[in-house]
Length: 116
Image (cartoon, rainbow, N blue to C red; front, side, top):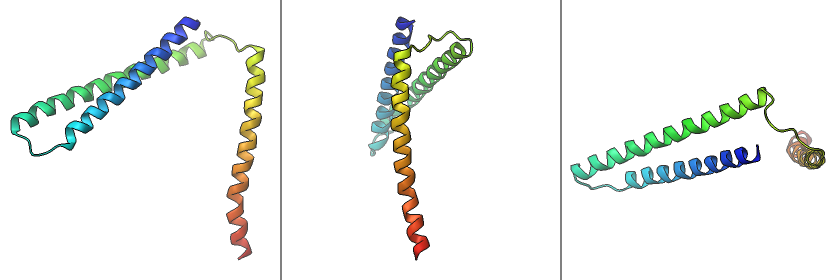
């Protein structure tokens, strides 16, 4: 199972990297102006190709999430061991502390407004 999860993470990373590269390529092609009609038509085809690649990669990411959901529903994901339960509990405590801090900060302006 560890090997499969590593493969999924590698595929995720490569898809996201490629999507960003294609998106940057589209932006670079769109920024320049004052080109001949031939150059514009070639760049239009490149933009369409990059856009279809981004769509294909997005569909692959959706497929990966669907596979993970199916595995989760069918109980095929590995169980969490006790050590990770302790670390999760520690993370929950930290998250609760941060939430308290944030909620205290958001209450301050309301209290100051009521004093006015």
